[in-house]
Length: 114
Image 1 (spheres, rainbow, N blue to C red):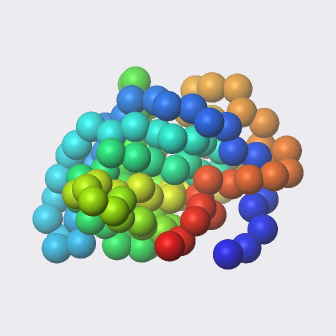
Image 2: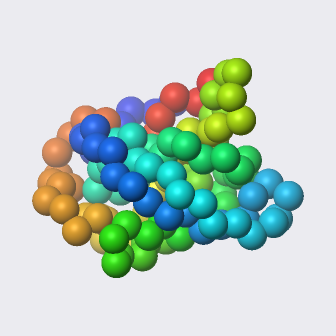
């Protein structure tokens, strides 16, 4: 696990996730963020297994953003997953919120990989 490049902010935001699951089936489901940063986020309440490297679309309010899955962790005793994602664009993703891209610290996209 590498050192995180950006500070993470604990923030639960309701989102809609659209992607292909591990069996290549396209799905759309409601989920939420657990924490966010300028280059990524950690998502919870994902009910489809995803593969590392998969591209997904997140809709938050009227904003649609594309991210790449960087890690997937199944939650023991449930059929849910947490995933770490990072932005596909060159510029930091703000989610329409004030998040400083220059603060050193934690980047949710580089979360625990157990």
